Length: 113
Length: 113
Image 1 (cartoon, one colour):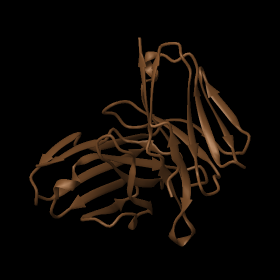
Image 2 (cartoon, helix red, strand yellow; image 1 turned 30 degrees about the vertical axis):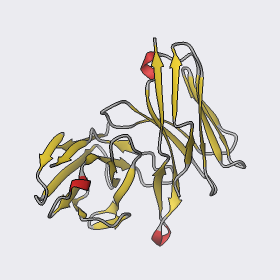
Image 3 (cartoon, chains in turn orange, yellow; image 1 turned 45 degrees about the horizontal axis):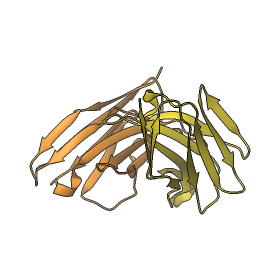
């Protein structure tokens, strides 16, 4: 069966510090991968998605970036965090195809102070 | 364009019924429903792929009216465990001919004893 891991689970970072969040998927090959951000009490905002190694599409302009160095690894990064980057970051995977059902990881709660 | 959910919040007592609606200004080709418990990741409930399709699991069911571009989630005889935020999701076209997921803002459901 497929599983998705994210780490760390929680993170408190000062403004201006760098960020690296990692997501890995097990039990499937060539999944579509996604990064979402959810502000407190808000919906799911799609940040990046990837259909293959090295292929990244950005949906929202921001100071974040994403990379996919391996088939089942997706990394979210920032060189300098802003206060507005605080939120709940979710990685998700889906099978390539018409339905694109999203299977979410446990999430990382980021607080920027 | 993200789908529109209504109502924004529902408060029930155990055993009562609820309906959550999801509509789109654009054609809906599929509708996903997810539930998110507080502090956790969203969990997939069901997907509806065809107009007129209805699905259900125990006392949670959904319908999809393709012509009206809307879907409804029905929670019957609600239980305390139904509390959470419910999201509908669909796919919208993106650059390069791909489709990306987009979600409604969510409906908060609170079930009291």
